[in-house]
Amino acid sequence: MNIRIEKLSEKNFKDYESLTCRQAHGGCYCSFWHQKWTSMADWEKCQKETPEKNRQLVFEKVRSGFHVGVLVYQDSDLIAWLSVGPLPEFYWTWKRVALIGEAAKDIAGITCFTITEKFRGQGLQSKILETLKSYGKEQGWKKIEGYPFDASAIEKHKQDVLWPGITKGFEQAGFSKIAPHWLSAPEWERSIYSVDV
Image (tube, rainbow, N blue to C red; front, top):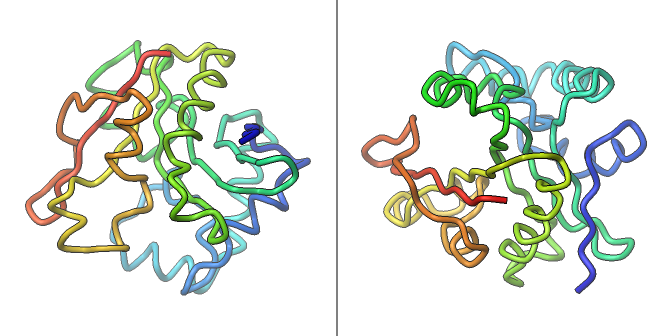
């Protein structure tokens, strides 16, 4: 399989929109990670009532040169979107950045992992992550982190907690579990997986 990774840009933004605007209550545009929210209710209201705000926020970050994420293609087919970039470029990772300090600028975090419906169930996560490691090395990243929910949380919440990827896919791509996620909680257990690039 010929997998190609492209950094999100103005040029491929339409492909990005096709994977991130079709949420049940409007458009998330994977913008959650770049904003401060006082509650999940506020976030859900924003998706439903002002999705264009989410789109514009991400578009402006792209135009400003932030590494918002990557699109993954197989030949001409769009197969996935990954919200991934250096940890300091995401508001949502501030606790992780505070913990590891200066080293955070060389570590990329995967905050969301979305595979198109056509390509789901084919075991592509590990193949995409293998390709992402090579891409990350080219970007100058020293490590990549993923934040999947543990099996216990998936058993309880099913499809609702698959959006960061699954542990098996990270393990197959050589990632190792290094610590509990900073927001891990009873009923919502999750972990930090890491790999050197």
